[in-house]
Length: 95
Length: 95
Image 1 (spheres, rainbow over the protein chains, first blue to last red):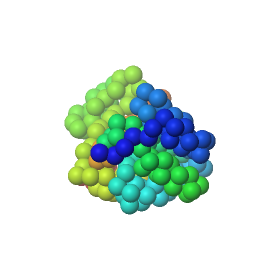
Image 2 (tube, rainbow over the protein chains, first blue to last red):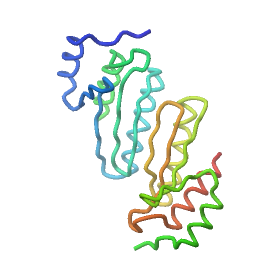
Image 3 (cartoon, one colour):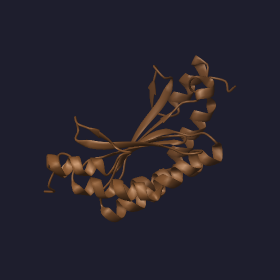
């Protein structure tokens, strides 16, 4: 079992991830990305897939042409965990 | 402008794509795929991305761990076109 963030930890984490939106219903964070075209969008997805594979922590995500939406939450924690914060930080670092 | 399939063409196409479901609201076809794990799912997505790039025809799709959902429709046709049928056929051929 992975620990869910406490309210204080969540507040600190979200403050450090201003591009991400908290979804209270699922206790998840989401971010929409827009690229020049499909090639650039899928290139980004490929880089994220490497992060996800290495961390064994996988996004819920969708793609429509040049747009990518990523949702992060931790099923084993039934909400946000440090693993989501680390993944969001690593994804932001790709840009 | 790309031609939307006629009702007769659509019926013939759907009969040849039994794994795909027609969504009348959007005049789209969808298929859910399940793989062994994320690695296999993303490998499949990478192969689909090559088809999409080559055809300049892009899916609306999502991935959650080992599951991939693909929706095909043609915005320029405001519904299903032969391009969707060709893409679905090519995707099926990957499996």
